[in-house]
Amino acid sequence: MTDQSRTSPGQIEPEARVSLDADGVVVAIDEAAEELLGDRTALGRPLTDLAVEADRPALSALLGGLRPDGPALRTSFGLRRGDGHVVPTALLAIASPGVGAPAGGDPSATAQVTAYLHDISAQHSAEQALAATQTVIAAITRAHAPEVALESLVESLGASMGWELGGYWRLAADDTTLELALAWSVAGEDARTIVPERFGLAGSLTERAFRVGEAQWATDLATNGVLSTATMADAAGLRGAVAVPITRMGRPIGVIGFFSSSPRPLDRGVLSALSIAGTQVGELLGMLQERGDAVDSLRRLALTDELTGLPNRRAWEEAVRRELARAVRDRHPVCIAVLDLDGFKRFNDEHGHQAGDRVLAESARAWQSQLRSSDVLARYGGEEFAALIPAWPLDIAVEVVERLRLATAGGVTASAGVASWDGRETGEELFGRADAALYEAKQSGRDRTVAAR
Image 1 (cartoon, one colour):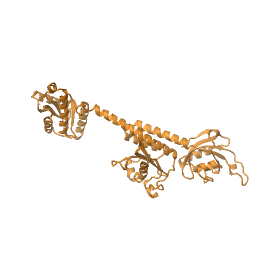
Image 2 (cartoon, helix red, strand yellow):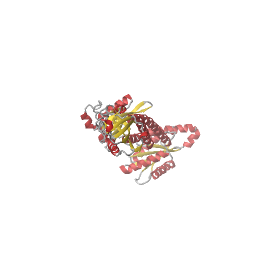
Image 3 (cartoon, rainbow, N blue to C red):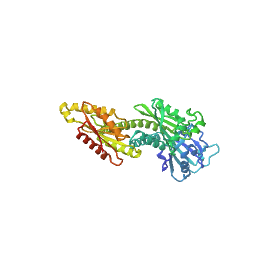
Image 4 (cartoon, rainbow, N blue to C red):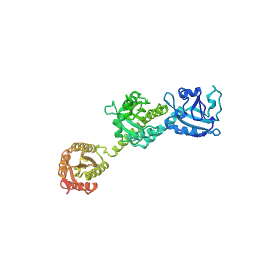
């Protein structure tokens, strides 16, 4: 939190004044300082003891660098109040020669340093909120899917706000309980080891945040009624914690939680920033989900034949490439069949194109019902269809295709050619052999299946 620079006394309003001796020990505080500190227990303690541990080295270095004839120095640090809460505080320190004080006089008369303190919680909250917003936007815009965005988000927010562990909880399949969807550790701890032994013990904090729809802060899980005993908290390695609901359109859809291994006093700036982030995350995740759904819908349209609902030629070619790659790995047979309705042009001329479309659609449905879920039936073009039949040898594939032909709708017959992959040829070459067998079936009188030689 520290941000050191040289300045003049007029740059910070002297809201509260603390007098220090040559060793940096507090010897006097004014009324405003007493209010800021929460009580008078700071008297007789080094000022550095009042800072959070992470900021003590920088604060000590600043005080050690003060000179009576030098400029005032400024920094900011986390001030731990008497009630344990941390207040983001700006400090302006001025050194002056000590002056002997008469007995019973004002202790500040012997002060070597005068420190002016200013509560910057509002500024800190705004900065934290801005940083959280930027983190949220960056995580969302870099991601192509909600789960990727959440993983990046938990890691970025946790690291930037000084937490050690983080996780995202979502609604389980029963739509009533929460389940841990992902976990993050600043130390790179394997998420599989985090889940049961650690996060499971802090579940009530996340459930409370989800249930009430508001962020929940636990200074110490062992004393906040979350983990029943300090022993449990120590076993889990968790003490400080915050849980923030992720909301969309005012409704909680999940919870992000962060944890530390030591107690963490309430930081209202962090709490406010995370609460704002929770709403932003929910809305942005919703937008990302909608965008993904739209892309998936467009992709399905691009790969689907509108009339029959079957995969189109482009989708067919992708399916063949995938299946042949799988066949190389698993060493199983693959067959391709090409089917064509006989005399379809004449049927259209006699009955009209609407009747022809019905025959195509009904035949597609009938053929699809005869195939396994692992098979792929596609409309290749016009009245020509293709079937991908993996894991069965040629003779079984021919039997399957015969069943398809017999199920052709509208009183129309069909011819087919079937080829079995030789283990070396490309998908196009395999299709070419099946198509040649189809041509042979047509030339042989139609309404039959021919296996490729």
